[in-house]
Amino acid sequence: MRLSASELSRFGEDVGAQLRAPVVIGLSGELGTGKTTLVQAICRGLGAKARATSPTYALVHHYNTGATPVYHVDCYRLRHPDEARDLGLEDMVRERAIILIEWPERAGAWVPPLDRHFRLFYDGDPARRIVEEMAIA
Ligand SMILES: Nc1ncnc2c1ncn2[C@@H]1O[C@H](COP(=O)(O)OP(=O)(O)OP(=O)(O)O)[C@@H](O)[C@H]1O
Ligand SMILES: [Mg+2]
Image (tube, rainbow, N blue to C red; front, side, top):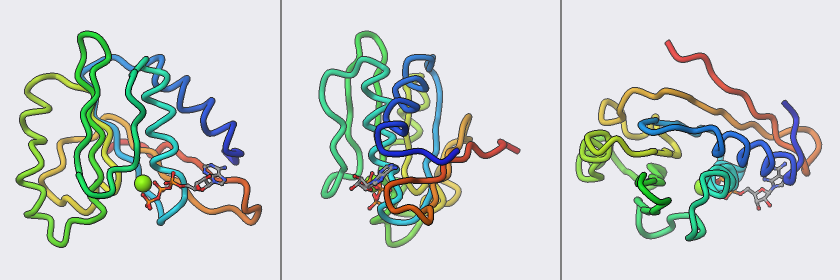
């Protein structure tokens, strides 16, 4: 799909509205392709009250949407996959949360199995992004 920012938001809101816990979602793509924008839209679709800001300093943001905990994890700043050991991913899986992970490949083997995986690419048109949902092996 080639989506404008508003279309990407709408897409994310639809994905969020249909999500059921437990679920682990990976979001991959170069810097600035729209991973955090997509996470924010998914959280809106889930009915998360707090806005999911880009976790610049904290790597993990937590949102309560009623009964289900929602976590937004950004692995970009991990210098080594083993640093992901301390992110608490196992606990999130254990509590059957909704887990949204930017740059999952940077966490190596510490990433729980992804149920869905989105990949974003720059388009020739700077106002659009290509969004693909990857097949899960
Ligand atoms: N079609 C589009 N979809 C999403 N974002 C777009 C689009 N067109 C332009 N943008 C802009 O691209 C930027 C995407 O930033 P965002 O923080 O979501 O990217 P990111 O992939 O999370 O980056 P990072 O790897 O740094 O975390 C925003 O400034 C947004 O306004
Ligand atoms: Mg981001």
